[in-house]
Length: 372
Image (tube, rainbow, N blue to C red; front, side, top):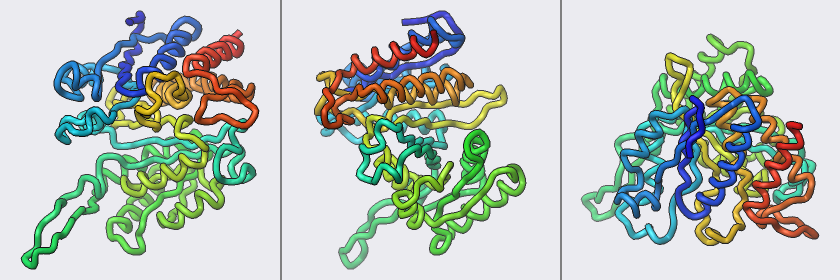
């Protein structure tokens, strides 16, 4: 489908529950296109296993070209057991890595927001979590996952050694740090920079560069340094002390999963991966729910579309500068949850689960009410 506008968004439904949650995001896009000031030129392309079946590659050239020519990319999910035997280079998950690499998406934003209606859904006490709203920013293209040398070698005595190298440079640290400070200015004005400066030279460099960046360009933002192990403990002890957390690829991978558990369900968590700010003020960006393709429930109408809808809200905020529309979607989601509507993953005693489509329709109905 194509809608007349210059806001070019590419929707990549993907595999598993991806098409189901993507359909509900499309429903909200259609609502926005007809009821709000923002319009869309929404196109769709293949990715992941679906792309492999159609073209022999999980990230076809046509999909990459569409992504590069768009204002933002909205992704459902990729992967499934039917493709696990493929060569590593052809597995569906390689498509996401390819998008990140070719679009140079270096900053991964993972919000952890607890809606009041779900404050008892986590394994932590509701009083610890109620009202929580924090953001983990993970450096996405450097660090130990990409550093050289790396690999596994056989030593002269027949034993083997595995090597991965943690490497960061000043530009890599400062550009993700700048994203964190800029984001904090529009939130609570506080950044926690997380590393292991006590035992890692790369961590010491990270701390020094973040501090110098803050002092030079972001003196209005409060900065705290914290070791990664302490941060993990503090996230489950007192998560309200955090506003924005910025950290390396490895530590961000771990800490964002801890923050995910605070909300009670992966089906509630959106994410954004951002590239560098261009000369025209735009940047490449990919938005996707955290939950993955969930092949065990694919096609059953059980998937929770809220993470996908909230990913669309992040797209509006970070790529299209439509903060009011993003806030409207978030309010609609909160109100629907307050009404007692639940998909199976967030079901509470005494409630009956609704389908993926029912949740999407309820969100749009609430958008109608709020916009009236």
